Image 1: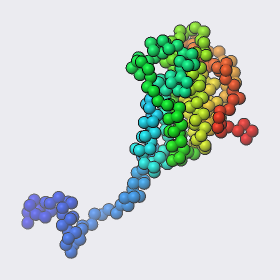
Image 2 (image 1 turned 120 degrees about the vertical axis):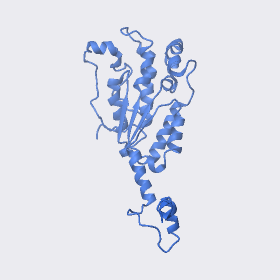
Image 3 (image 1 turned 180 degrees about the vertical axis):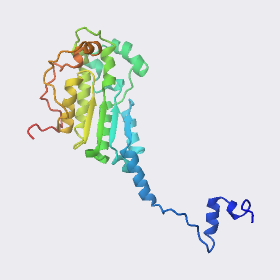
Image 4 (image 1 turned 30 degrees about the horizontal axis):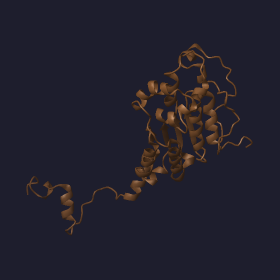
Length: 268
């Protein structure tokens, strides 16, 4: 019989189904039977343990929905790195917000709002409560000792300084106190993640002295030295790109302060 019109010309799947109903049985494939459940677990492990999720949106409730409804529970326990990039709207409205802290409303409306949320009032959410809900969910399902969390806050805070203050003018630090409070509250909530593998805070204003302090409070140990004073003289590059207050310890801050729920025990 011509192979072009005979049994061999039929699609492979159809030939297999036909043979299953004969004494010949299905043909040998030369391969191995696959355990679907085992394959699924292996695929989930490989994908989620090697994928870095970066959440960048004003609505932290939407972030929680993604973690809860899109990522399977088996995937949550295999996550190894999460990054949360905070937004300008979150920085402006976290807790009591920028205006209540003394940042000029007209400056916010003129210099920040049009570029970062299209003008007018910023998106209104309960950012503080939503952030804590996200962390509580992570604490319930993630393998915390193997999880690394990065919180990027350098970009979202910088516009409030850069676009409103001259480069070399003496800065009224109290006007940007809300940035400090924003850092502290985000980190305080993360102290609930007991035994977290690693925490990294990317900061701009006040960043050099506060970054290692916040990481220590969350993790329970210091990843890098903590600066007690600001003695180093800036180079001309530092003066050009980052005014002095970029590295200064805020006058209201106490480096021995412990955050609520701090995991740091200095005597251990």
